[in-house]
Length: 303
Length: 303
Image (cartoon, rainbow over all chains, first blue to last red; front, side):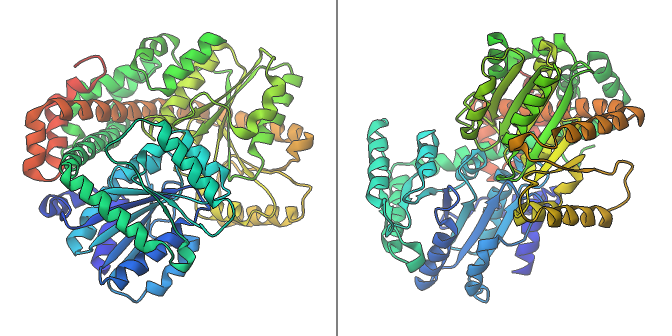
């Protein structure tokens, strides 16, 4: 467990020494189910994550939660404020909870969460839950890593529904209306339903599940919806297609990450390139010549 | 003005066709002062931006505000909710206000704000204010674009000060304690001061300025502090050094952005690369061979 935590820290730090490890590990085991948990602040995502952990433990399954926070570059490995409640699982060896920030560069968070999933799967966890703090671009990038993405809403949070309207609803495989015992629940469900009806007809129609996570209500129904989505992914061939898409995304993200870092070093060390910048008063020519002439030196360990 | 807005939309969309334009424009005019405005939500950043706009107009200077929101990939060009108040400047041709999201990829926001500054400077604006929505990694990246970064705090927002403790204070050239008429003001100032005293002794000691932005109070003192910081940058040679550092950052970011996008396309089109991914069950080998063998094809327009 301590080695796992250390490996995740290396991943978060984007340490190039992990490459060999991941080449040995290969892809996550197909049995590991990767759940994305996203939604606006205030919808009770962390309470829901807690309820999901309890559900998995009650069903004899091990579970890991990675809380991805693109706004926390500094607190790597630290625990979210409201994550304290999860300490009831602190002594359970089949539960792993960890937050991950976007150290170094924003784009790195999706790469780091993909690699964390590989580690957790290889370690043997049955489920990995990727929780995000909000509903922005970084959440979209993290959602790309999950098999099934739960979009969490709560009654009376106009913002949440507006966000969906603005375009995030495409990432939802299952809608969760949490705090379903609060006033405004029916209206929230109606709003989601009417938005779904306005959109194009899709092969998978995202179900809407009501939960009261603080009391563990609706979690059985939610996990049933997740299982149905997984069955759909497998039977439609989408699971296999997504697997390759994910490898392509990951390879492209690595190309971007490696080349940006190495280019910054080259620009610091190479006087010709610095002179080029001074002459051009623009970065385009230097960027172009780095890619055209120094491609091989952009790979970590090849300088 | 409409052409300017259109050009900023191209920049936000990361359209490669803008390269020629920026190679012609060169760097921002040295007279254009670039102010960064960052701080936790609830500190009154937008009200302060509004007060700064009013101050510049009262002093006969034109001013542009770019509100950078890494969490708004969908609302490019739209207006922040609380930005409505700025509409009092809507008919003033010497004021330009615009929000910018992180469409496509998170790392793109710093690049987009750099290019927006070039456009606004070439258009003739005396000041450009880059406002960010929070205090995370994206804010750090945007702060790298500004000459002077204002870190805004407010009394009674424990979070704000905690964030600083966690490491963001290094980006502050000037601390602004806004809502200085509210209880807890002295304590906030004391906390900032004691943190500054704990840190290493720096050649520029960030001043702490009290404002009540909603009533325009303290803005003269704030702009005086900004002017002093600018004078320090120039006399110490830091302004010139930063200019080259910024070009290097920008070139490295472009290398990363170009190569990530082009690599994703290559991976889609090239069956050998896809086969490599399938065989490796890991992205590293394919990423490496793209950089080593396809470097020249990663530059936009070179496929």
